[in-house]
Length: 209
Image: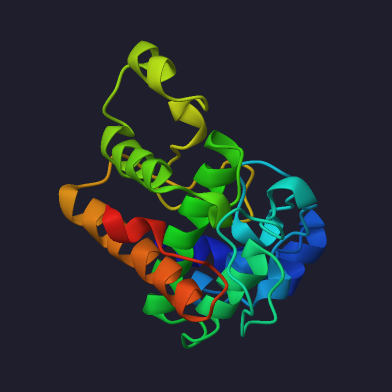
């Protein structure tokens, strides 16, 4: 209530004019009601960033993945476009779409950053490594982690509730429970199975995990 009173005071014309301050719409509208265009514009780059800000060089974008199928019925020519096609089946802004995007995003970032390969080149052994990555994340000392994984643990883990447009955003907010790990694997297995059904992938490497 106190915060709401402060916001109302700051938005009074006499106060905002005297202070020379205009609150951004992000301060006035609930996060669930914000439109995509409201977030600050962020240049696309290759790194641990949200899906919408991720740039992938041709070498790792999946356009020539080792597990690419033949005669795909998708128009997608790379993994990012294929993931977006999979997500487009879900109702916009639905809980399901957000959950699916989160897990596809995590898998894609891990694949290109940790393995330096696109999703469409992942082997069964890579998928087992991803399962182990989910289990160990947030549970190892930096020394133990460095002996097993390439990207430091701290680059994957962030604070809960950080907006996607924030430079402090991270794909994970802490160690995943056993149930969350299972859900993550079920979702990414479903993604790869759907891509296999569309002949975008030759086979589903997660099916054996």
